Length: 153
Image (cartoon, rainbow, N blue to C red; front, side, top):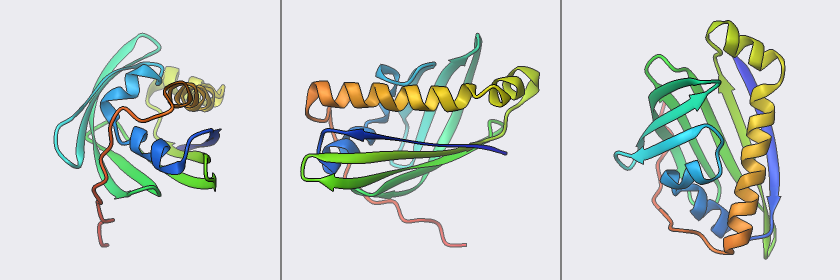
């Protein structure tokens, strides 16, 4: 497994940053390569992505969601990745968004891209675009304040 940890400081309250992140269907507006995300239930999403010319579709399950704190997920099926985004209050009007992602690169192209830091740069770029998106708006496009408890081992 490979991993990435990146963060970005945004000039919006933590609630605004968190609420926007829960709007998964908006991800294509700031995530490179993400063509579509559909939320199919409170805990399931369906993704269509194109990376290095290869189109993939996969489902991801939200495994934990705590308002204003964290959203964790894992893919289901053959595409193997999992991650968590955490939200930290810096002050009344700014917050830090931290992304931790673990993934299993498949094939020579993905393995080479991983070794060359492609995923790190993409994650950093996506977080910078999220920052620009939310700061330009100043408010979220929607919110889901529900809680998803972490599965018990």
